[in-house]
Length: 153
Image: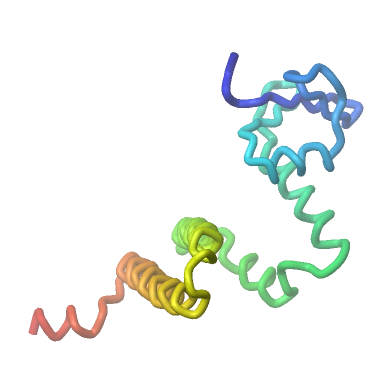
């Protein structure tokens, strides 16, 4: 059995989970995401439409309650489409979210320590990781840190 769960989307727009042999809703798919289950959604032509389904879930989440993305942030993201830095922004955002998730995990692990010491250590580690990520982003965009320019002179 494959470790990746397959969900089929039929022409009637219903989603069918092949692992549990039943129709599922977007809420069920959202639960798979929240539980860290690897899955793919395929249409009747076996084309992967997972991203479209995930975007649909995000749209529903953004429509109800307090949104994660502001209109300004969404407009800025849209401006990157078809631009020369689109791929770089995508990698930057993915790495940033990965770092954020790691920080959250580390925070949960360290709450057994003195809270202020744990927070100070995590804050410093966070600053270091963000600085490294920003430097990597700037290097990829063709910019160098001032110290690298001075060393070359």
